[in-house]
Image 1 (tube, one colour):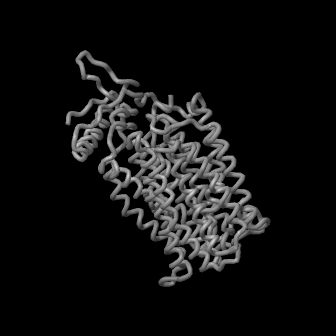
Image 2: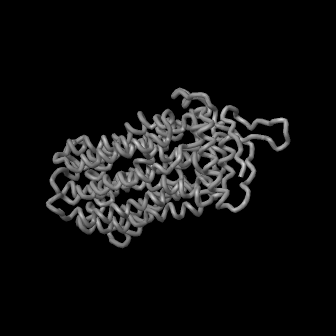
Image 3: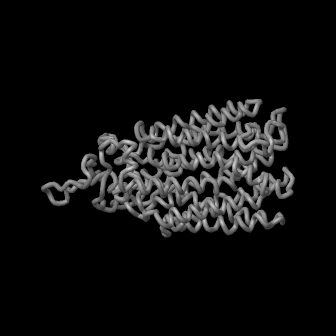
Length: 477
């Protein structure tokens, strides 16, 4: 197959004198690719990398009872900002995530998606391993914060990477698949916690083994990640047309061989501009409205999402369930995590992205309110599963959505900025949930979650633009 040369400089295809000699840019060439095995393999490799980030992100909930049992932490504290309470451990996690997303996510716009992708993994892995060996609450909090910085950078980079490597007709399904793989980490960590936390294998607290397993596994994935190419959209935007051409030629050759016939003809579209972006551009039209919308959305979605996901075992204990049984019930609930993205793969490119987000948030309000009133173990598990399905569908929708709202030249920086507010609110949500649980019990916790989800529905439903099946840089015009 003859490759189509990249026009990395111009915002539209160049027309030459010869008929049929029109050249197309990187966006046009990627967006015309069919969904073959090679395209899905790239998505899979990225999602496998994200598996360990989700493992790290969600073990907060499942090692919590073990941290309390070991005497290092208490469930609640006398003061709002007590460092020895479980809320402080949750807060340290999200403080690190905030630093990573707000201050460092933009490094992927400067140094490339692939480089930052790898470095942030090594950062997180080393810090998590050190954290597992600490013996005091303040030391654990410190290394949890440092590890969170790496995870924060990684999550933004993965989202940016996926959005740029897949064609527009596949973005929704690609993000759903990434989340399917990533969320399979949740039942895995829940099972390990259920098995290990009540024990002390070789004299070491079970919660430490859960943490160590995640840290060591990430090193294995690092070798796999080297097979993922740099984003050709980013290369073209940087003016590195020859490198982008090389990546695209290799991908097109593989896709064409698997497709069994000539690739579809590219359609002229808007291409990545080679101009450099400044942070202030986020506050210029049309990005200003989008940034404010996503800041409001992310602030409240984190309270609603992590208010349940990070506190499942503790909430169950507060409803009278023993630690051992709470971890078992939490494992049953956690098994449902991959099923939300599985549903997303069937509907993500058929339902407008903003509609999926609004409906998912509404489901959390309804099922969360019912959860707060139940005492039956069966109903608690059923409603926990339904809340989890809605939460994962919400995650599938918004992770794809916020990468679509900004241009290639500042995508990682902008996404990191708007996403960082969710890390900040999640950090304080640990204290808010602990406060609500102490004074208003589980009912108060879900009242807080419901109010947050209503704000999510309003922000996206009223102010969010439509993005489905549209070219990335076209959406940003």
